[in-house]
Image (cartoon, rainbow, N blue to C red; front, side, top):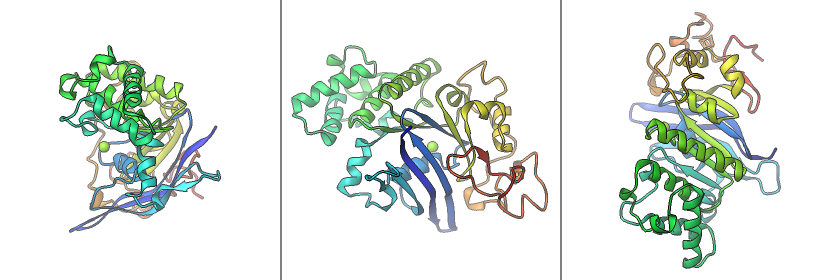
Amino acid sequence: ERTSLAVRDLAVHFEMEQGTVRALEGVSFDLHAGRTLGIVGESGCGKSVTARSILRIVDRPGRIVGGQALLDPGTAEEADLIAMDPESRRMRGIRGGRIGLIFQEPMTALSVHYTVGNQIIEAVRAHNDLSKAAARDRAIELLREVGIPRPELRIDAYPFQLSGGLRQRVGIAMALAGDPDIVIADEPTTALDVTTQAQVLDLLRRLQREKNIALMLITHDMGVIAEMCDEVAVMYLGRVVEYAPVADLFTTSRHPYTRALLRAVPSILATPRQRLATIGGAVPHPGARPSGCAFHPRCSDFMPGRCDAASPAPLRPGEAGASCFLEAQP
Ligand code: SF4
Ligand code: MG
């Protein structure tokens, strides 16, 4: 199976007046063609910053301070996105052309001022040498692929004339306009009602399989993880704390944080897409990171003098495990 993207030791700092906030530290994982990696965690754990770092669209005061994001690792074409100028022609071509992005709120990707057709046509032409007429045909085809009824009429609609579900389908069509082989979906169904969520997830799964896409699916919803993912990275305060095949995550999770997340949704497999309930204790502010294992103030297995004194070893990319002192330490 082909590795499409290898993220290694990604580190992002936010330079604030109060000091440096380590938003990401030592984040590593692989995306494989035809597979879905779920990134799960509570809000503020660094899921979106990870996505934005790969695409080189981290907003100030955020700054990537280390790590790599290797496109086509181990091949002659291997290229590190972190080493590229974010405004370069090459990076702009990769953004949308190799890596598509689906947002939580489709209006993030769409302008209110233009028809959906004009926006998709522009996205198609940004990544393909096509005439306007050919790009329009391609846009209609894309709208059909994402299940928009009567696309030859809908192409001239403005986004506000569409329902939230149709708008997210247009958002997906936009993400696919450059024919990417990697897609990052950041909470793609969070803003939708439950029925529409199911339909959009079905669509994503179908497209992912048909196009052999490497999908990185960001969510805080364990039900979405259970339904969609092959592997899962659990993030807490800017680090990956557990990595596992999806079935193992639900049956033999190894990190106390993962187990707390799962306890918060006990009937998860009976009622898919249930929202993640809150677990005990609040997420600390990333600028006030607890000493040692950052999860220790909320951990039911906390070992005083150990867990608050040092950090457990980080995970090796691609290997199942947990970053926790309950695991064998190297
Ligand atoms: Fe809990 Fe200690 Fe493991 Fe952290 S290292 S998750 S505090 S047992
Ligand atoms: Mg987010």
